[in-house]
Image (cartoon, rainbow, N blue to C red; front, side):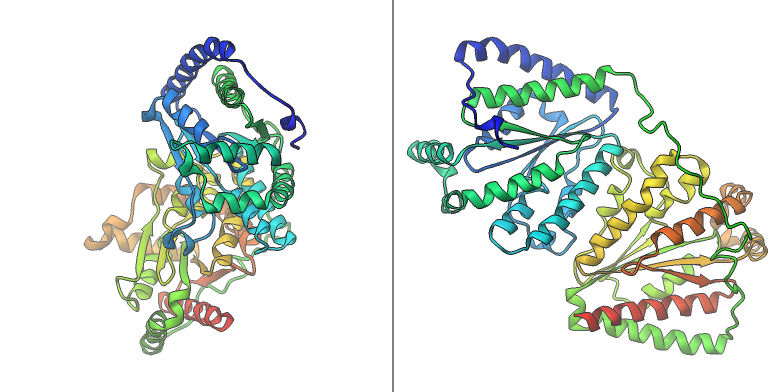
Length: 495
């Protein structure tokens, strides 16, 4: 992977003086064209060995390009806030929107390499990180991002020489700390882990570009030329359908039976039983949220269901048991302009809770495989790949200690019609019924097929779906609370 970068690459001063001004102007023009078109984001990942000139090149690009359309983000040691969330959370927050260039200095590849070098993880765990990186980068490219990854390389001899030169110059001595010296002594381990990771994550859609860091002018010219060529090629080409081939169709079962139709939706429960069970379960949930072990966990509760199935009522019974300082409610509607400029999971990553907190989603990321699928708001290849991306998202949450509880509240068409009419006739409920609700009702069968596919493909051991028979609201609310309480208790038992 690093053989070519080991060669003695150099650029003389005359060539630099001739090339740099033209390159700078062309990069700036490409940046303005990108900002005007807003067709895609550019994600530039900068990695490599210590002393190879990573920060110098990032500083040069920052100087050459317009800072209004440029985002530069470095990733030092994780903060307490970042450690309390899934590992990729900090990187999702740093993604540039469409129309902007983001330079990510030491991104999602750095920590897996470092942890392996320091022998804090096994080779198998490094391979697990690599698989996650491959899925994440494939998702970015599928969402339309132009992803460029630069690995700055030095041989062991070149690195020692570079670090000595930096340490001897008062202007650059601050670059060489005891940490850099320690890592330099571990060069062979870093080289082995880095080659393994870069080779495995150098893919057709997101290859690593290995750059020799021996000559500053060669290094900077190579990165700037590559960035310009990639941006210009994407900007100048006509927009194309990235997935021309259709996926195999997802057909309903031949006998018409599915997981929704198999439910007995009219589960009996009297008001007296409901009041008794509600108080008991809310008390258990309140006690769990105050347990000292809760500070080591977090809860993400997802509520989906048919229109008028009672999601809001179920959510209120959950929040009624919690201290308002512990939870956040996220009501999901059509994406804003800011959210449409990012990969579709971005707006959900940003709401993930810290430890000791609860986030409740009223509608969620499942809109991609439900409403967006049925209404044609995204292409078939996009919602087809979303199943795997959602499973990966939820696995990352669960692996970081988040209790993921997902509820589908189901009612039949007759019950929905009765509730729609009741909402229209009740003054304080009229806001709950819209023309869109009536229109969605006309696509009942299409939504049912989409719901069953969603359940089959995203109900996993780490994040199972709970199907809630909701014709009787009392039963639905109690089942939601009972399931959530058990999920938190099981998480405590596993600690």
